Image 1 (cartoon, rainbow, N blue to C red):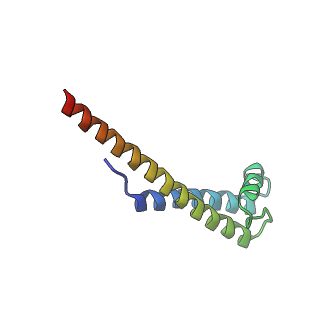
Image 2 (cartoon, rainbow, N blue to C red):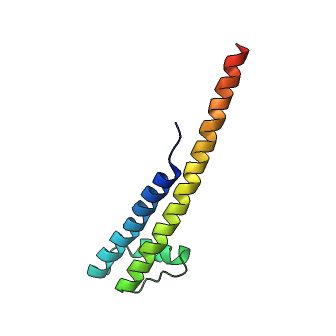
Image 3 (cartoon, rainbow, N blue to C red):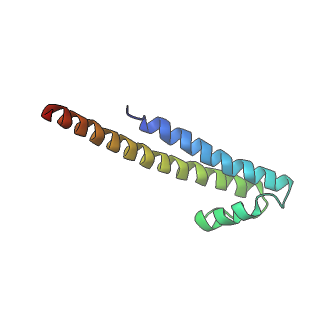
Length: 97
């Protein structure tokens, strides 16, 4: 079974971007929430800064969306490549028995 690269990219991008968005929005309401997570994200994403502003939260969510989509593409490609190799190995093994 092969994965849809587009589907995995969209799903993982939305999941990671919405996770950063959710933590950022909660942090706007309660400034002590998620500080360690947001500090870590500022070290990963160069445009995202832990300044309690809506613009910063949106930038972090967009960064997460893009990063998640790229990671989803890589995961989908790796999964499909391994599935193809497994199918080829099974086919070759079936010919020799």
